[in-house]
Length: 313
Ligand SMILES: Cc1ncc(COP(=O)(O)O)c(C=O)c1O
Image (cartoon, protein in one colour):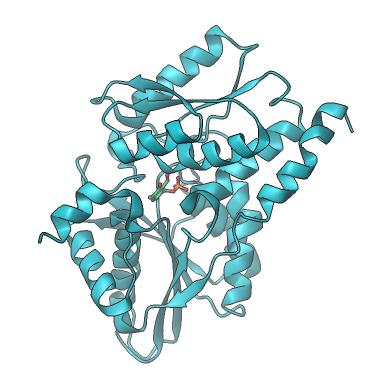
């Protein structure tokens, strides 16, 4: 093993212990019948506070092991939020400099967290979203290839593989192999693709549904409306048996319901994933035994402005 990789091995192992292994809880108040169960994986229970720590860690670890990152090479990527924060925690722990291209309209909370963790921020236009941030990151990486390792979470197989080797194994073990349905949203699509491939391999009968916002303008952080966005190269459109469009306002109603009935204060996109599971559950015959699992990518912690609107004083 090259000495460059050895240098990071211990720190990678220490950080790795804080990635994944998140709890799975049943949302009993949402069951449409005694036979149909909905479960949520609380992904904010890990370093960095979101599902994206899984992908960020695997991307960084893989790049270091290949000798493509570290030893003078900086980490570079585009992200509007959770991935950037996940990279920032891990890169700080490893002593690797991080540059993030971030749409200028990202919340002050996010910018503050990233700056506190020592991230260099370069802003892209507030009107171009993550698509424009990606273009800017790519241009910077091309201009200075010796300075940056461009992680490109939308094309990097280590993104979906984090879920294939990690999340899907956890779900299988936590449901004792009883899972019948898996549903989650499409962002970079890593969560859906990795879990879908992993679960399908364990039991080909498992039904898979992907969620998208019902239009280009939506309030679901981290989600992509594929008909009007760049389709991530890691996306595999052969996997989903079912696709459900999600209305942001209905997701906010679910957010209120989860707070009141389950004691979970989650992000709008986590509530939207639960709404997807709930709508799907209602399509099933009530006598059918079903164990539906979804991911709750993050809690309400970083969404102060949205939460204030959903729960006005
Ligand atoms: C809050 C939130 N929900 C959903 C997603 C989508 O996950 P993925 O990128 O794995 O498709 C993300 C991704 O950044 C996210 O931050």
